[in-house]
Length: 210
Image (cartoon, rainbow, N blue to C red; front, side, top):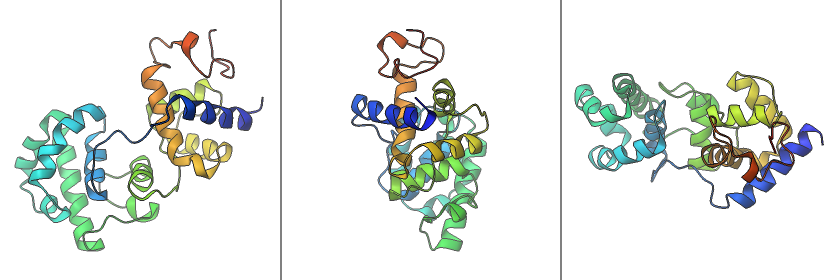
């Protein structure tokens, strides 16, 4: 089985295993997803989802975040970790959104990565989850690890891994594949103790211990 066949078979099997796979950050509109994604850096989605209900009740729009008192915003997101940098990124990001995009989160990769606190991975999450636009593949630590275990890439840098995966996986699956790999990485292919014996990919995975 070549890499392209293995990639497509893996996506098919994971879709059956995780039929409800999706972005696990809670949000109701694009700007909330931007904030939640910035907060999720080096934190868990569960932790972020505990913070955002009160945060989004207090700051209802991009302008509210742009005009927020920085120290107060820091206090509101303190439990997310790295709260000083994250508060500054959120405030500056929303200030740019208000001043340059009329308060609307842009819909292109080129515009999104210009926003403070938004890198390519975050932009892919926003485009996919908020706008259903398949511009690329969001690569996090789970995606990196599983893509390497499945021998779909031997790269360690996210942009190169993304490029390799985009060549192997049909565009229609670019959005879902990240969520599928993340779900599988959390539940079965656990970094410290992979459960290969119960993995739906064990017959096609070159790293399987079964």
